[in-house]
Image (cartoon, rainbow, N blue to C red; front, side):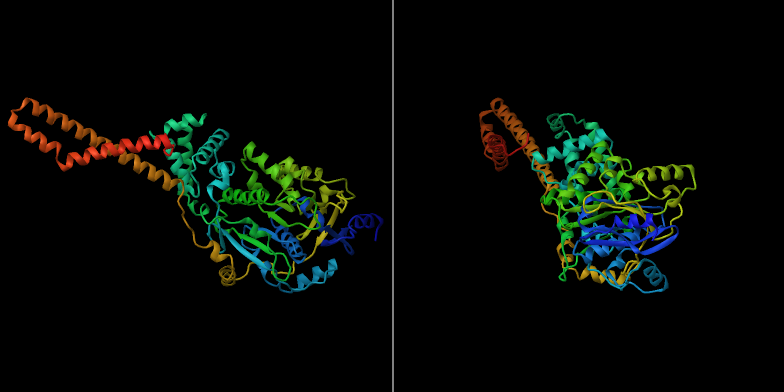
Amino acid sequence: MPEEAAAIAGGYAFTGEALDLGALLWDGQCLPGAQIRIPLSMLNRHGLVAGATGTGKTKTLQLIAEQLAAQGVPVFLADIKGDVSGISAPGEANDKVQERARDVGQTWEAKGFPSEFYALGGIGPGIPVRATVTSFGPVLLSKVLQLNQTQEQSLGLIFHYADQKGLELHDLKDLRAVVTFLTSDEGKPELKNIGGLSSVTAGVILRALTAFEAQGMTPFFGNPEFDVSEFLRTAPDGRGQVSVLELPAVQDKPHLFSTFLMWMLADLFNNLPEVGDVEKPKLVFFFDEAHLLFNGASKAFLEAITQTVRLIRSKGVGVFFVTQTPKDVPADVLAQLGNRVQHALRAFTPEDQKALKATVKTFPNSAYDLEELLTQLGTGEAVITVLSEKGAPTPVAATRLRAPESLMGPIDATALDAAVKSSLLYSRYAEEVDPESAYEKITAQQAETEAAKQAELEAKEAEKAAKEAAKAARSAPAQDASMVDQVVGSGIFKSLARSLGTQIGREISRSIFGTRRR
């Protein structure tokens, strides 16, 4: 082995548990004796898998996910194109697989891995994944509604108002009911109490929300809300559960599914305890099509992502962003990604060449000419650098990656449906429920207000009629007094009088006990 290659290989000779990624490439040759690995204990230090379309990123995810599951680490994968479901079934041996195994010194064995399949809002095959509007929060919802910074801040005030008033926001109709109320004649005074929220901005949010619903987004929000701790489970045989979120049915809604992925990650961050450095992660979360998350993101949104990525490591969760070039990821986030798998890049246009140069600058000093190498890598080959067991970057290594042992493609639709329906989680989340929340409370309040107004109107009319009758009695002959008595003593008059008295009593009572919002 050449001296330079031996020095690189020495940087990957870890003593603890590690994942085998492939064999070193040097001077056009694959060296099976020089294995490129990543320490299991460093997988909560996050990572990046990048490369042009068709260079093998999905297979790299599959390879890493398989080995994590085999080591007892749960994995979350987003399946954008519908070709990751094969991880649940044994792979198929063929000439290409056998050739790759020989090249990299791999003992290949067909294996399937324990998997659960999910679908956002139950759209597509999978266990339905829903979130309540309250838990989704104003920052993430602003991203999917494509609100500007001012509107995002205003939406935050609306959420604050709902929280203060005990109005649960379970689904979109709850939020729409609150915004509609705040823009109504009855609710406009509440805007002044919130402060900084104009009726015009509230109207803009309402229109954005209505358009969002018109695009078929309603099923993604509601109950039962998905418990993201389901992703942390292991199979009875001790292997990690692979959770696959099937997204082909919603791939035309990139802002929605990318933001939902961020909600899942943020929910994990909020709910998991601090564990510090661990021997192996509690979960590794692969964030596919990561550039969609950052496109058009507000400053508050980017700050929230950066903080989550920076701190979730201590909760035992590793995050791998998957995208085309490192420049798709903001610098503050990229700085947190210690493990790098860079597939080939194209340099056909000036923009491509600029991205190539920027990518090379993100790597440590290397014995390779990376600018040339990154344009010449074949499918299933990558430039790798990871964190060693001591937390220091390893030498940059051109690598021919191993072949996944599970099926490299989707499983049959019938098999996928059977796997979903047989899951113990399916009955827990399949049927949507609609408990009392903001919509029902506001609707009831408005009905009560209308009833009170009607009763007040009827009482005034009755009072007016009584005064007119009394006036007529005073000016009429004495024999007509009996007519006044008949009017005042009539059932209708008594009913109206009781209605007036009851309404006044109710309003005073509610004012004293503070049960009405005024």
